[in-house]
Length: 119
Image 1: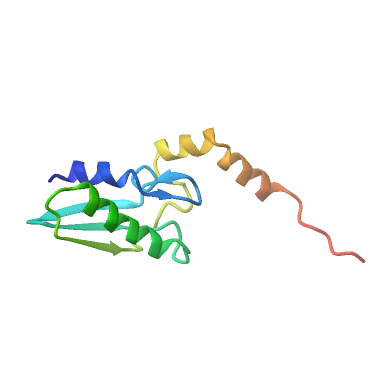
Image 2: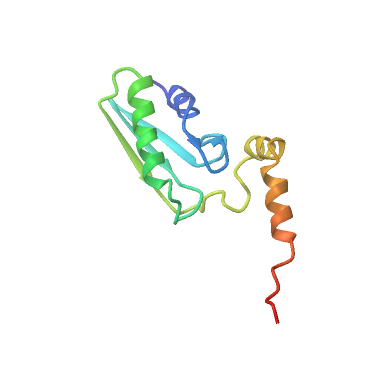
């Protein structure tokens, strides 16, 4: 079992709010392997992410089902360095978001005028 195998398996875990896997999105900081244990250090898109529990459980399940001889998977969610909430992760993830028009939609909504209160 290698770090590359673990990261390859983690490409199957998708952050559904943006439709990009957690590796390409930049949420996985490291994959440490010792004996038959794997420790993943990662973050989520924001501290209040409603998918926090789901993503960490998916990480455990994917590694245990895809990598042979894994006895234990620990997932540590950290907040330093901050997650990619502001820059949407690395270039590969940003390119995919642009292709799917998520980024353009977000910018358009941010620039749209606020509703005015009726007088």
